[in-house]
Image 1 (cartoon, rainbow, N blue to C red):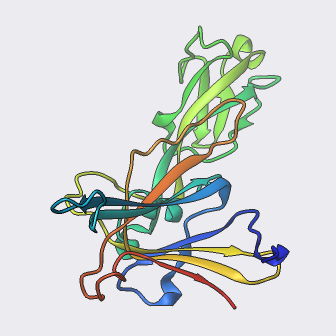
Image 2 (cartoon, rainbow, N blue to C red):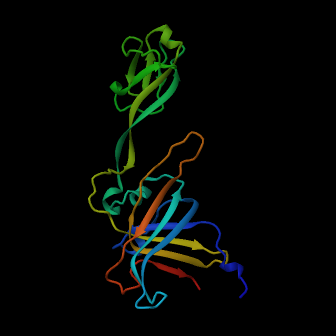
Image 3 (cartoon, one colour):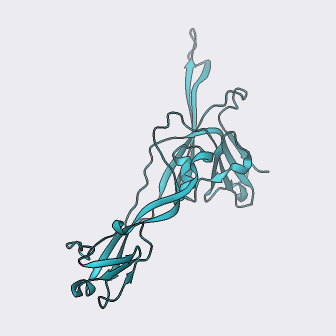
Length: 252
């Protein structure tokens, strides 16, 4: 049989997840993929021979597992819900969070000038000002004043002539996840969809899956942050034997 180019697979696809009990409309992207997505299916088989036979006459599958691994190259809090094995409905929350900011400022050309911070500080007491090399800690009320939570005004000529670092806490709307001490894994439905060159799609689906494996998110100086995610399929006991682990399909 000759090879048809439309059957050749190249490139990535999309990896989706949702709670196993949710409708299709709840599927969301795990994240933009990088490198490769890898599917593995393993079976543990026990073979048996009987009497004087020299070959095995029976083989039974005593354990099987399926998993899909992918590398994610973008960072968004809702995507991490799947990574940490959490519930979609209760953890994707928007609330105000505190963030620490560091920025460089030329204090001013005179003691009458006020330098404006790029963001509003959570409070005046959250602001900490140092020299550029962090060797000198400036004192509010002695070296500078703060007419507002966003302004630094020199009080001495020496401070006015300096380039300083302003460190402060600001409050911003944010997505957040609280993680830890979850005794039971959240079950997900996971679907990977790959588009062939001819436009047809290949689908790998785990009707029930969990997020598995250690989590490592590297922040590097010279490399973009890419982190790995792994889903393992769980057997669905409500399905017939032989159909409980995963589905693999190709669009005709």
